Image 1 (cartoon, rainbow, N blue to C red):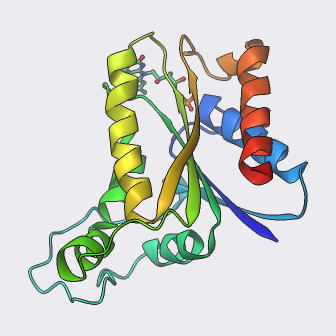
Image 2: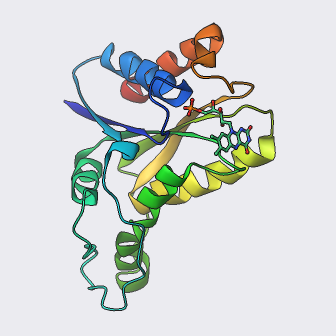
Length: 190
Ligand SMILES: Cc1cc2nc3c(=O)[nH]c(=O)nc-3n(C[C@H](O)[C@H](O)[C@H](O)COP(=O)(O)O)c2cc1C
């Protein structure tokens, strides 16, 4: 059973990120036996990283909030589908707050234990923006790749959807919807 995790980084319900991540999950679900979990970051209570000076060396964050569910879901996921809109040339604040909270794992893995990435998981990035700014997309990708590497997910695919500013604009972009669906299939199949 392949464990697929969809992470929604937009605050807009039924918006472009949600539609595309849902489509990708549908594609994944159409292919073999999968378990699907979803995390809507905006619905969770997540404190931004506090750079705690008493951070323990075990890779576990000491802040007690809804990140405990995120850590659990990431740990058990085989495939992570991370969706975020471009906000001011980067990923959304929701996405960044979640990612920053993996600093404890980053420190445990790279600084304390000097481990390398195992790429035992697969990660795919779904990104949507109103404009056609490739530099914004590249900026977002760098952050997501860094996040994926930290959680041992190889960068296995992406769907970039430009020119989609209005709510649910992607519904009028059948090529994007199709690519999202196919991305989900590809992630489970390969
Ligand atoms: C705070 C904010 C900042 C944004 N910044 C950018 C930007 O820098 N470049 C861009 O192309 N679109 C920008 N947008 C537009 C969103 O990327 C676009 O509307 C996208 O479809 C939102 O996805 P969603 O429907 O999943 O929330 C911004 C939107 C918001 C709300």
